[in-house]
Length: 255
Image (cartoon, rainbow, N blue to C red; front, side):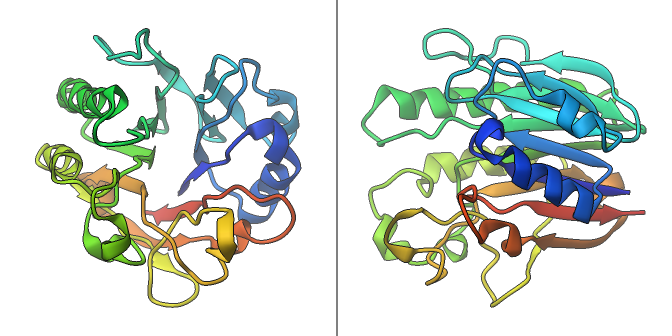
């Protein structure tokens, strides 16, 4: 079975690219983030055999899961999910072919001295609590998406450039470690070019072409799923061309 996650940075703007990528890559389950729509364009992907679950409000967030292997137990958000100030559309859980999939779009955090940074940490703590309950009944579980945190210094192009910035602070990385402490495995995908497993490159200043990126899109899985992984890669080609997302998809083959 082929799983994938991709921050598409507006499914409306990226729809032709998404449809072409689905047709070429043929993932069985796809978690999407930053869909930025209240009404997902389901008809375009249903023609390729996908069922759609979406959770969006038309603003800057939004998540979705596309599946060709069934779509059950749809859960929008999680209990006691922190908001800013109200709950945002940042998490969606579904069960596909016996695997519990969570598509998440973690708050950015903005700056370490902002209220949004505290919101980010509270949101990650709430996610951990929710996943702890989920794991009690779903031994095969994946939580993936845009975490807006680079787990280690090796996951950014220049650690010195990020001193004092979000995405790399101790509390953010500790929040990721707390997720792994639940028994989740960080499935690190291989890059298709070079040695850096980056998944995000800012649009500015030719950062993609210089490979000045970050690994902030993550694929965390229980051992029962991670142990079945036969390949995992970053589809860097999907970041190229006209009007791409600033993120590349991660593709994971299991079984």
